[in-house]
Amino acid sequence: MSTPTISKVKPTQPWKRTPKQQLLIAVNLVGAAVISFVVVFATAMKGKLAYLAIFFISVIVINFVENYIKRGMAAAKDSIATSFATAGLIVAVVPIFSILFTIFDRGRAGLNFNLFVQDMKSNGPNDPLGQGGLLHALIGSGIMVGIALLISLPIGILTAIYLTEIKGIYSRPIKFLVQAMSGVPSIVAGLFILSAIVFPITKSSSGFMGGLALAILMIPTIARTSEEVLLLIPNDLREAGVALGGTQWRTISLIVVPAAKSGLITATILGLARVAGETAPLILVSGGGDSVNPNPFHAPMGSLPFYIWKGFTYGTTESIARSWAGIFVLLSIIFLLFIAARTLSGSGDKK
Amino acid sequence: METKATPSSLSDVANANKARKQPGSGALGVGLEARGIHAWFGDKLVLRDISLDFWSGTVTALIGPSGCGKSTFIRTLNRMHEFIPGAAMAGEVLLNGQDIYEQGTDVTKIRLKVGMVFQKPNPFPSMTIADNVLAGLKLAQLKSENKDDLLEECLERAGLWNEVKDRLSAYGGSLSGGQQQRLCIARSLAVRPEVLLMDEPCSALDPGSTLKIEETIQHLSSSMTIIIVTHNMQQAARVSDYTGFFLSDGGPGELVEVGPTSEIFSRPKDIRTENYVTGRFG
Image 1: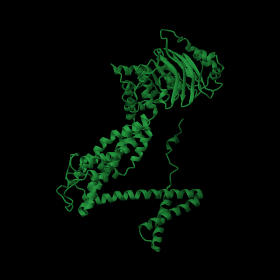
Image 2: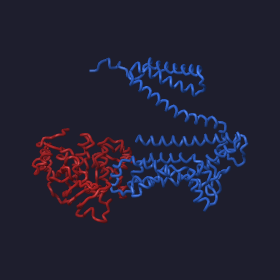
Image 3: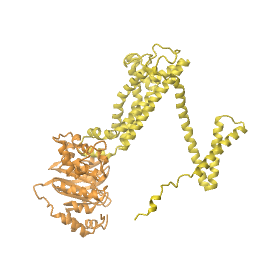
Image 4: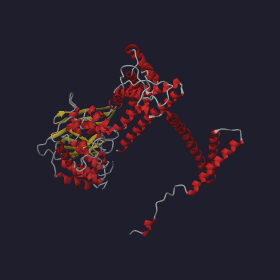
């Protein structure tokens, strides 16, 4: 027994702002802008910051008054809280976009094709931007981060398994140490490798030493993130695995770790992103070359952070432009790693 | 489905079941014996002196109010009790005459013989339906000559084959709650246990799925010993041959009475059992 009027009902969202209300908001904002211009013009205050501050104060006051007249004191206070939260967001986000814009703007000049196919062995700091490149730094960073990954991935994940699955008597001190280690300044990791291995044993810097220093920084990141991921796996699954006649190790390796796979991949990528930009330890232990050096055990090895640092220390217009291009490349890589981490952890949630 | 039943209807259900099996009928004998089981969590005694025999090829229901130690008790029967930190126990559990707590016993072998289905369906999320069923073989490193046959047999016995045979490579999590629980039953059947423990297997399920699982239990009971913890007395009356009533008066849980299900629901010996099964408390 359907009524014909049913088909005429249109979906509405009565809780949404009406065009009239939207217009009022626009009028408020324009009013605040006008006030800020008038105040800056009429008083001694000058500069962009003055405009922003007056504009912000005006918006708060206008909203407050409007809400007080229409809906009373509680709504007026609510509008102040909303205004401050929005302002906090803007204060946090504007510098980030400003940094990204600056890097893109300054790095643009040095970006060209030969950046990715040439090294700097036959080019000096005064050569024009069309010559030379950062291939040696890209390869060096790749090799050293790769070495760090090979060392810290098994150690980090096994540490997390010890903390969450085996829960041995050393769990508490190890947990404390891992947390403390994730706060170790990166130059300390470099100094440790320098004084424990480079000076007494190898007596020369190499890519492998750089990889070791980065691994020291990467292990706590991977261990802590993996621990949190493993803690999210419900205990039911462990019990089910053990109740089916599995040993603890087989239950961990066949059920717990596969169930946490996407989270563990995210943990690894976050670890990579953490160390890819480390500069201080690499300056100490891997040195930096100007030519491609694919051998991590012999001779200094360049890296992106080192390339950037070196360019700025030369101080010529060209070398500084090269550094900005290097920053752009490094940041793009880290950005891609974060996107990969987000995508992988997101696809894990859907299942 | 009724949640509260009159005593007569419960005993009717139980009586209808009575003809099915008699204690010790056939050559099956006593499969699992619990002797003087005590259990502790930390310093707290939660179970006192439980002795119960489970005949092979029968279904035993354990009933009683929440917190009376039923689940703790069945977890001592396949050594899952020790999985909880701070747990302790005393007593013997004899499986075919052998104490499963004897020094030097391989605990993984015990859990292969005494399988378990949990309260909440817990299929392995990283595995397909087929892999879930066969997970026990991998976990316990068992060989199977024909995995396809075993897969079909286990899903058939769990009453799930017809619903999933066309999507064996889908993930276990894509099934409904009731199907997931039957998948978990199929998973525990794949390692061919002699005893199956079920810890409130239907408490998270709708009545339709509950009915299917009860049918599955009826099918399985001809070939194995089943012990089921349940809060649903209708269910206990429908599926079980024997019923044990657990109770705790604030202290540790104790076994008040055990007997053929029809007698527990029609002529219980203990007044506390009568009060519970007639719905006067609990």
